[in-house]
Length: 417
Image (cartoon, rainbow, N blue to C red):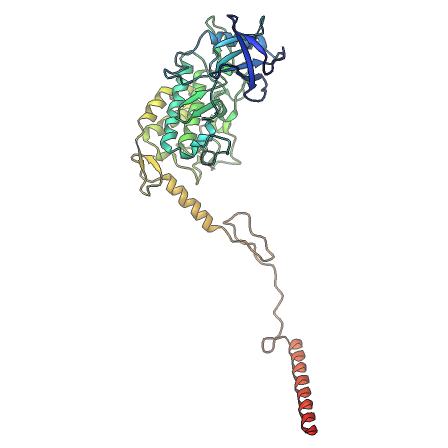
């Protein structure tokens, strides 16, 4: 069945549901539509030729029958865009209904964790992110933990726990979307896997495994959670992507570093903190220890990773103050403001930049690199009164000619008078 805007589908009880405009372009699995007369609903309709469609529909049906208790909060805020109803074409299931999330007030998580995205939103994007403070980012991290707790209470695993599947509202509350891609086990014990994942958020124990056939455990979500918390608290810096590599050869890729427990600024890590990133030591000691458990100990012992509840409790206890320069928010007890230090480092780098050279030699690409040495120069010529001999003789001849001409004119005037 070719479903487009104005197509009518049905709920299992016979209620008609009319598709409105698509909310986004078609994905590999299907298309998400708005629902006419139900602004609080969205409908995902799968492509008829989707590989594994029957299993996908079985999974969605199982999820509809096991909604997490905290999927929607008491005030109506949606924490999980969980499937709520199956959609049929009148005979067979073709998709499902889920809560609709307003994108007029929500942004993807990377917009919050990345300082440049946060402070310079596109004109068509929500503008409230410009006013977000570090305190707001701590709240976002705590609310992300709350959302993950809701998933884990129904024995599900997010699996593809990446930033584009996490929406942040202007109240710093968090919604998880694309829930139908999560790993889920139905009441009969049938397990539906999550076949996809981004490498930079994939737990090290899953490296090299076929995710289409490999079941995941909840600690794999806890690894990704720690990465997201790190990026929120550390100005968008990924613990395995940005740093100063001191080991042999080129810096390994993120998954290899995660397997070895080398993370930016971690204890004994060969990946040091980047000069323009805050050190993990500026955070409260209990937060530092949670990162050690997640990335250092957890590299070989996934069960050691902090739970979402542990993260949420520690984050809720952070007390925030303003630095001595009264320009930045920092945790209470932080001795040196990392943001002031980063500002100073940036200013120093700007001061070291070589100005544009107008001569024949190009300016070096690296601001601290020395200028290229000049090539061999010819020996200076012999001079007389600051001029070379040829120039001097020409000038002398001109002067003599002018004097002789002036004398002739004067004599002619006298004789004629």
